[in-house]
Length: 373
Ligand code: GTR
Image (cartoon, protein in one colour):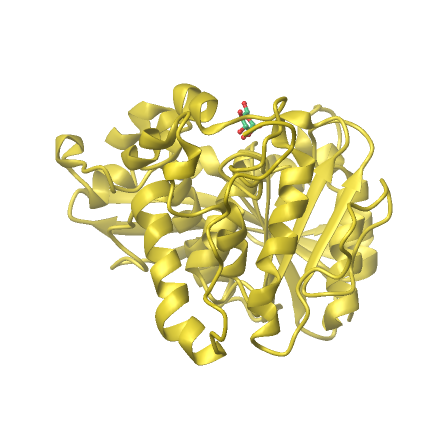
């Protein structure tokens, strides 16, 4: 794999595949390959005893332009009980509000702190005023609240609840990204109970390792109408078979973060060509729903060209439904988003991050595809 050339990319589908064949045969086959070789199989979907506890009364924010609600999600299974928290920032509106379901890095209660003061955490990069003005809610949870970002996480919930004996893990047992994505679907379960939110217009969003999580959640959960992966790179939107020497490869990600994936994924370190799938096929699992991929110019570790090529190669899945995937063949200029088709893409200047610029583009894309209030 040299000089930006592609190694042979696994085919998305055979010529002549129809939408029905895609849904009944090819999509399930691809989904199964991602379970078996990349992320692992979830032992549970919506668990028994799932319940939602309101944490206090809703609090007004931004002079009453929005409210913040806090909720604790409780669940149980063979190995005991688990819980994690959600913070929802919901603009005032006469109509049901579309929402971004955000898997984030800090405790969610820090994100929409009604005082919005002090610390340096990611909440300062969440443009609350813009969300309120444009009519978008943000429902956030912290990935570490679902399961810790370390290998020992397999001995804590939800792994310890649904796979109680870590010794019994197999090469296809779910990894940490799959558990985070499972947590996001439980947040979606809560969203479905919240009358202020528009359950038909929920976008799953994450940055970096959480961008990988967003993609796996979108592939698993058909209720996610738009999946946004920001700077997701290796194990996310970036094609593994594209030779981008400065970007992260499977050998590096499995050395540092083996537990994010199922054990089978380790087999593909320095052996990308043997992996039966590549990441354009992950994006295609979302068809005909909306997908958005965003890159940053200085984020060579995530491989912007590889993220873009995935969008191009996934696009025939949308054609099966008479829709357009990515519209635009050439890698776009920085700051010139591609928003025409059902797959959106932009690259901004700057480093690995998710900034107000990125959020504004996600909202532009959603607006363009009929989510504008
Ligand atoms: C890096 C990792 C990337 C990306 C990033 C992040 O260290 O190599 O794959 O996920 O962490 O999540 O910030």
